[in-house]
Image (spheres, rainbow, N blue to C red):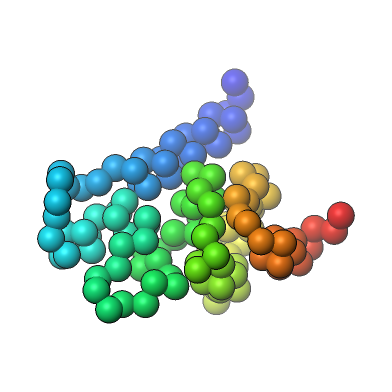
Length: 121
């Protein structure tokens, strides 16, 4: 295995761990869940809060690196991540999509990603 392959696989494993390793055991209170990476990355929101975003910096890159499906309720938020004013982050996200691919349903969403990445079939 070359270094690029090792780095790619290491990033994937780290992303998967962030999505699956909970910082608590069993049933947790709201504050504990709000501070648990895995809970937040998998869509936990306190009661009454909007559910069309993930309150975790870099969530879009972790989803891509882990191969997690971008659910339809997060697709607009994902596109916003690609248009971030933090250009270094947006470019890193684009590079991750090129390297890892994207796991998403919906032809319109996939076409929007292709447009942003300037990928033409």
